[in-house]
Image (tube, rainbow, N blue to C red; front, side, top):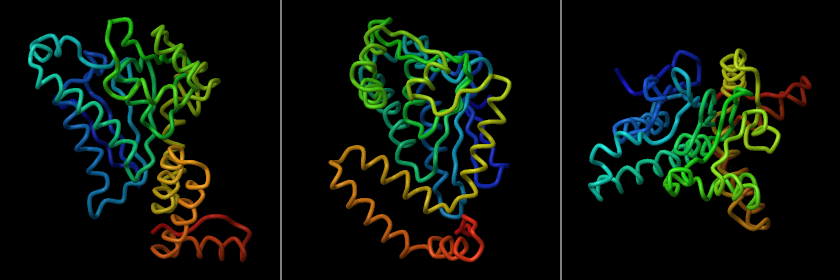
Length: 263
């Protein structure tokens, strides 16, 4: 059984399902290697994938690193353990750097390494009863996939440290209230809400999506003045590379409607 399921049946959308339900989609080296390649493949020549949805099979999004797999000999091999940590960081960085908008669809549990993958997504849609948390501290561990850096950046230092140092979980509805999750819905509505959002985004011009994601993410790391220059540069480049901007303005001027042809 493959540790990942890939569904490209919806126009412009790739759904990637973590498929180790018997292990609550815990992450091992082979799964991460496949995961990294699958996300990168979305930008391969000839592909028209604008949105990536990441979700989990069975009862959870992901419970984090597969501790039984790590204890089976990986921890005893320093090189193998470092390779696993590098893979976990790489999948999170690959998600952030992807040209596509990445939606995390969270149900059940998103803990430790699973939480780190969720933190890397651009948008999170969650079951309001899902449980999210960085539980590394409860196992005398330190995050290896960026959780110690991304969580305070998303929630602010005081609140981020609270969750990092206590290892406490938050429900999906609380995560929405504090700004970690974009949308929290009843569990029965999660799949439909995620797909509806993905389809809405997939109708947008691909270059516009990629540019907007890039300037927002990079701009967060820059002083405001430099971020504004980045925005101007990106807009200039976008107009040079695509007619969608001019078409969208003309369409609105003529018909009072937004939208642009797909490039």
